[in-house]
Length: 595
Image (cartoon, rainbow, N blue to C red; front, side, top):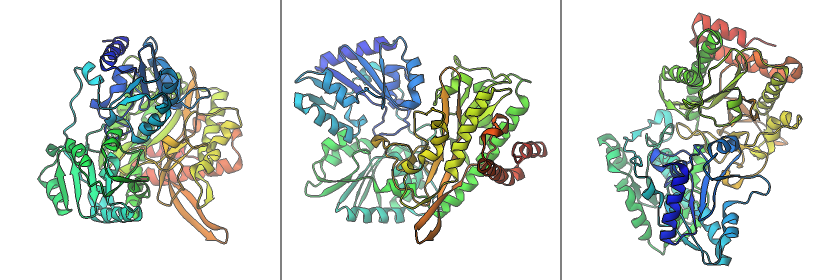
């Protein structure tokens, strides 16, 4: 069935159910950013493959909302589908709740699967449509009737992340979480976020591609811990580990029955952005609404995690440097495509000890393809690389020593003066933020201008944040820390920057139909000097890989810029060169030379 056929099939089911609108978010039952194949309903129904977006279908219209990372990609992928693109965050583009309130009539009905919509959004929808007394049906999944060859739910085994990597035991984490429950006057904590559960239990899984998590729910009380999981995912070792930590294992889907049966006289601590609408509607207890305490706990890496992260990033830097050496020395001599380059980089990472997986699908984008921030090469789009222009490669790995995320844009041959000017502006922004010194209490919103400023000086902007939090062998995108010039509530990335937080620094320039440029390092936040003005903070780079000197216009760099770049490149050479062959080390020495 083509996309138009699927939309019409959905409308027939909507009429059968008395629904005037149906909403399909990009979620699993745990509101994950990246989902397993079983949950890719929005992709199936729209043809849009990005990691963020919501499809809304009415009886006579269909719209897809997505953010600035995907405007170009979505416009291309929605062609001919009859689905209108709604550029989320742009002027005069309504949010989904306002759109539905405007287009629906009194007593109309909105449908969606409440297990795949976050509670906070469901509550906002209730309020926005209450004046028209619009009915919400959240217990029907209509896509399931259309998607007849839907993939199966994953059943891979869960494994224990040793304390030499995690740094803190599960028992200590649970004790800290129970203390947070006391502070919030809660008897129960309902935890559904896969990253938070994996972090709390010091367990990892393979249920989501590139993100080592497993499908599970947790109900934590003062004296009990219930883990809701498919029992086939556990073996003798993990069962014994859970029993030792006082965990009762229950069937995955039984969580909804147990939530409805919780003592109504007790108080449940919930994060409305992290539990689904079906769980919220099933709760009979009083609620203490707050952000998941585990969100901040896991964002602040402990000393063992930070030590491991440096080890992991050295391995990743070696892999990327070997790739860049191969690319630079082979371009024009043999055929290289976006996909074959991605595959070579993946093989460089796989050769590193402790490598588990990629941390996301590699973005390897040549020239105009790189203007799509989250482009993914397909056999149809797979460009052959020529010894000219820019290649943008955004990639990362999952290691026992942590999660990596790095972007480098490389000149494959001659590039224009304008291209060099744009590249140098991006470099200046990245270095400006990486070298920030700031007082404790600052948030990403206070520092974003350091990265974005060189682009704004040119009248150019990029339609996304400058950086995001990164998990430890978890998701490559994790709140609550980030860099952004304005607060975007649904991104939840505007917290105070704490020592131990890891955040990416990745400004860019994206010119549709021409090229894209991004340079990205991961930074760990550190405490600096404390004096009469307060506690100063700074960033230390975790990423070790050369920045392409062939793409820089030195005339566009200040003396401070040059010192920053030279200092960083000396760090890269000193750190990475011992792990390279003689030819690779000699090449790296040239590509990290002082300018």
